[in-house]
Amino acid sequence: MTFESASHSGLTRRSMLTGAAVIGAGGVALGSAPAAATPLTARGYRTRVVLAGTAGGPPPQDGRLGICTVVLVEERAYLVDLGPGAVTAYARAGLAMEQIQSVFVTHLHSDHLAEVYNLFWLNYGAPGARGSVTRPVGIYGPGPAGSAPQAPGAPVQQPDAPTPGLTDFLRASVAATAYDLNTRMAESRKPDIWNVLDPHDIDLPDIGASAANRAPEMEPFEVMDDGFVRVTAILVDHPPVFPSFAYRFDTADGSVVISGDTAPSGNLVRLAEGADLLVHEVYDHPYFAAINPRLAETFSRTHTASDRVGEVATAAGVRTLALSHLVPAGIRDVPDHVWKRQARKGFDGTVLVGRDGDAIGIGRRAN
Image (cartoon, rainbow, N blue to C red; front, side, top):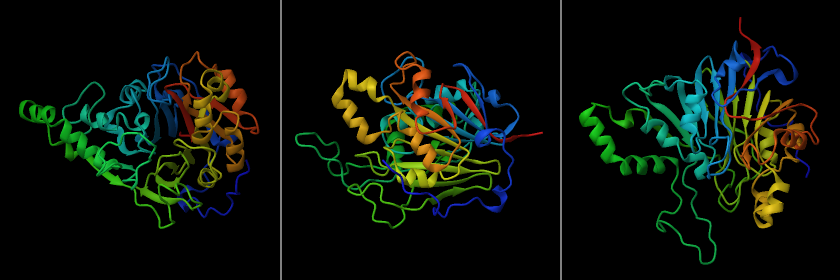
């Protein structure tokens, strides 16, 4: 597969982002950490990326918790996706709840959404072991998809409203947990949970995107800019899901792109042009071809094989590639050296095979 050149993306760093010094290839410093790691594995960097959870797929896996990627800018935490166990993964990475500034959801599959509500439900109001969320946190993600995927004979939940968006999900979650919330507000004087939930369904540019045209060629568009980080997004192809986003975080120290779930994507290449770090999902095709050829064929249309992700990184011009959302996620299922060898095909930059708690420094070490 060939990718369209990303040289005309129109997305450039603002003047505040120019001139950042780099360390090594791609301007990143890598630190591999054990399960109970802290972000101090990239000590001294003002901007870091913490791969808090690195597992793809809903089922529990041996050795990795559900996907959760954290961009830290001056200790301000911006989270991307929260899969099964991600709240625990966030805490194990040594991060406090008070650091959370915003949450971004790439798409509404369970292994990316499972603990988005839990992050707040379990950790707001009274301080806990890892602190507490006490102020509004922007939560950004897909709105309603419109039409639901159809298959002959397959049941459809909520046929009158089959594709709720992120805001709908949070409203329904609050309604479903009303008893717990009400008892805690009465007994412990916890505040209203809506004091901390600030959901935003992302408005798509008028480019003709739909459930039938999931990821047309487009330019990145801005989602949020708080003065510390500018977040842009683009549609990627993860059939049959719509919308499915990748995100780019531009900071004064450098740029990070997080792929979300996607097949090899020209849009993703455009978003990642010249980024210091690309965090990309992968699956191991030979593993699934041996045990479930039908599933392997499905993955070939919906995800990026580990032996093809290198060409994506090369097309985007990035120098450091971190593999996350690994499928299978079990530590013993596919050894790290196999993931790395496959990802190096067509790519001569640095490859990091994500383990929970790994931290990556961006730009130059702060004084």
